Every structure is written in structure tokens, then in C-alpha cells.
Length: 88
Image 1 (cartoon, rainbow, N blue to C red):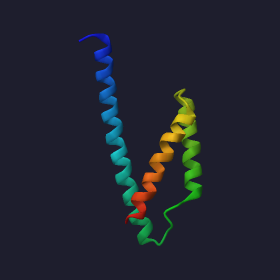
Image 2: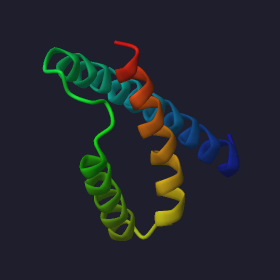
Image 3: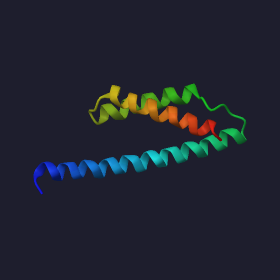
Image 4: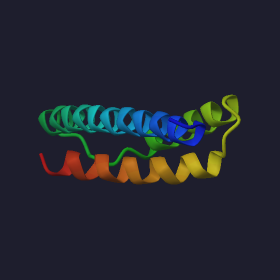
């Protein structure tokens, strides 16, 4: 196996890990949705989303990766979490 094949194999492993973590995140979002429904809470929580954006920016900066890219990724994840919570 040459260097590029080895690196691509590592990327595939990381991609699998990312997908598994997204699935775990969605499961947690579903549980939050169940809690919100039982406690008559709204799905959309603006204050929480602002805190999440600040957290994501901070972690992005800590790891020296594009905060804009991370914001775009989490915009999708948060949108999907809202959908999961609304489906409850």
C-alpha cells in the first residue's frame, strides 16, 4: 500500500467515526425532543443556539480550522436536530 492509499484509508476511518458521532448526536437530539414535549417546551431555543455557535467558534479557533466551515456544518446538524425533535 502506498502513502496516498494509507492516508485515504485513514480518512475513511475518520469519516466513519464522524458518521457514528452524528448518529449519536441525533439520538441525543431525539431524547431532548422527548423531554421538551413532556415539559411543554418549544423545539427552537434561540439562546441555546447562540451558545452553541460561540462554542463551535471557540473550538474551531482552538484547533485552527475554519470557523466558517464548522458553522456551515453545524447549521445543517442543528437544523436536522430540530427536525428530529419536531417529529416527536
